[in-house]
Image 1 (cartoon, rainbow, N blue to C red):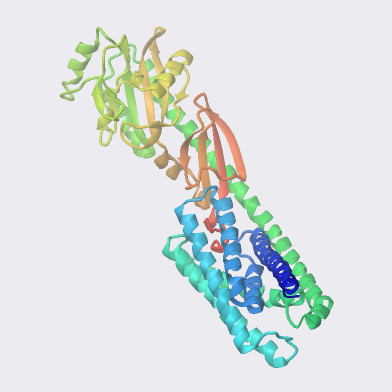
Image 2 (image 1 turned 90 degrees about the horizontal axis):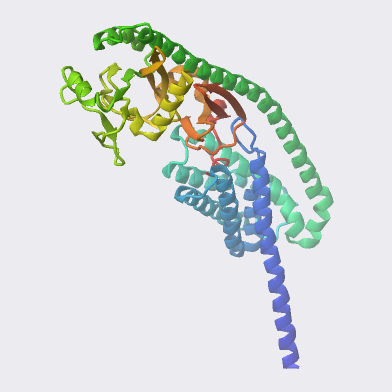
Length: 491
């Protein structure tokens, strides 16, 4: 008989363990799924989720199960926040892991505190059929939900996840979403798993179902309103994006026109004797009116037999002048012997561009390829994005100068793309994440966002200098009037 009783008890424990494990797995799954659904409802502007059901599920689970529920609440929260963080950033770094851990700890602490307070002030099992119990629940819910909002926002600000100016707005959004989640989800969860079971089961049709219907209607209204608002705002966004694309294209074409004037200045000098002073006088007014131009340059074609005499002549104005190249370490050194050289000789302005003086364009592959195309096509040619000798990322616009069909040299305009884009883009584009790509090399000419791999809502292509360019834009957090909710940006 004892053996038989032990077998029954063992079988009972196994079944009970399986039942508990299934319940805990359901708790984790419902936390993650409802949380992801709530974040998906976080449509701009503001990215604020009107309700966050996982907060209500976690607190109610702790109210029903006590401390046994807390590890599973933590597991559900960490899974949800890692999922959101990876979806937002495209990868998981140390900051993203810290954020997910902080929020999971805060959510678990709130569930523990909430469950303890409700058990102490209301008691469990709880029928919620007395005005005293209901009023206490309604009064305690906003107080309980101060926990996660305060701990999470404080922790995320500490690790630098968002702008400190948005603390109050993000905190309120977090607190309100958790509070509403608790008010809505506790009756629903209690109807499924609360005690006394016989009483709560009867309330599924009278309490849980109406609450779910009301929640669904609220969600539907929220989504539709935000869809209408998003459609309106994205219409403005597309207009600003197109304006930005047009400004960039016209800005580059304007630089091409300026280069054409410089090209004509040299080609109409049949004597081939334009001096450094004449070049400076011709260019200085242009560079003054167009401060986005880093430099205007004259680059003559020099054969190896002419090299020594050429360098000697240039040393009259710049002692120590020599034809140079940039080595693999990025340092400038004397160029070795080759059949032809294209050394930078005249530069306006000289201040800030001294390092470029004497640099042979043929010594750097990206520039050499563009020089070759310019000589063959006789059209304006742009390089792919290059590291400027003067420092920073830039673009060279090149045109070959010929006299009597023979290559004489090159005229160049050097653009530092950060300066060019800052001056050429409309003021409204500050609210966009902008990425300008060289289509062939897939190199970025300009990146006005920390994330190069965003899914662009707007894309525009144009051609300049025999190269194709692609402009990608997205609305950034500043585009929307409301600050970005931290819960959506657990990146």
